[in-house]
Length: 92
Image (cartoon, rainbow, N blue to C red; front, top):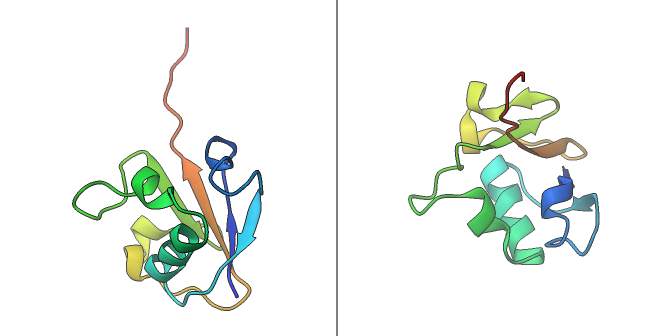
């Protein structure tokens, strides 16, 4: 079963948990299961067209899924899926 790392900004949706275990064999499956177990994730992670929001990065085993197969990226049993909000800013 894959493990999902939840960023601090979204932990109110997971009952304060930093990591949760959900079923799924692809990133899409894992994120769907995450929303089923902890409603509210879908609206925060996906836009109205069903695509990951620009400011949401998802990694499988430390690899950005945008450079793999996107939402179709395979997730093996025991792998970690990390949700990482993009950080914007600059030097002052």
